[in-house]
Length: 77
Image (tube, rainbow, N blue to C red; front, side):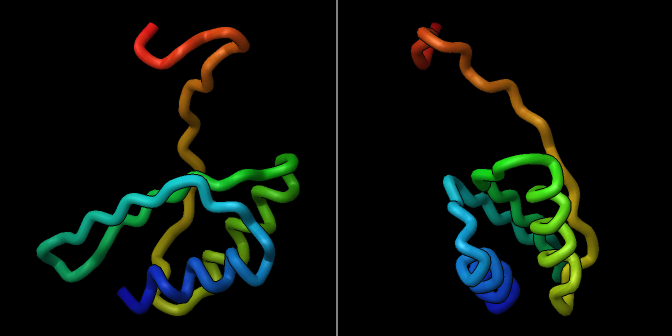
């Protein structure tokens, strides 16, 4: 898990709040690391992507959008 440590270290140094992480390893000795982080705006996201993308052994960095709950919605509804 050296790569995950490197990524989390860079994000921590940049004071990026990490809300969640999921790691999947593959037979070809690669891994997919999905992180949920707090960002302030699109420029902040681009800086984070660039910072992570420059880490040795990182093959690609991409944004995955997910639906957010609207005000007043509860889990399961």
